[in-house]
Image 1: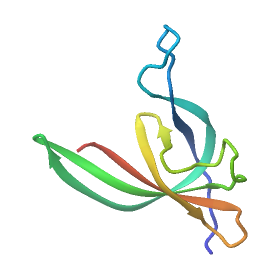
Image 2 (image 1 turned 90 degrees about the horizontal axis):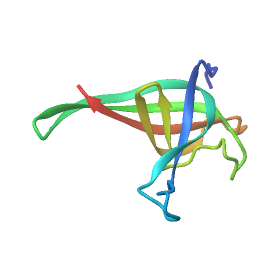
Image 3 (image 1 turned 180 degrees about the vertical axis):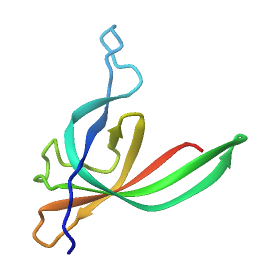
Image 4 (image 1 turned 180 degrees about the horizontal axis):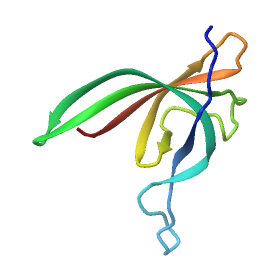
Length: 113
């Protein structure tokens, strides 16, 4: 296994209900769970057209230090990473190494081309 270089800070976010001010919940928003240091590896990229706009689509492998199951710092599908204005939706999570020291998050990023 090649060495892992955790050199990029990413904010881990999860969907959560947002209070509507009247005792209920409004549309879901995103809450910050913390910042994780990560190694980003570009997997694939492409472009597609939607509603007359060119959209780029990138697939990333994001490697982070492993946390125990159920820990708030352990990414799960449905969450996302934020790096400034960039959003990486987490689609799957797997162990990176046999010793269980790192997790690989398979992520998707879409934006205007």
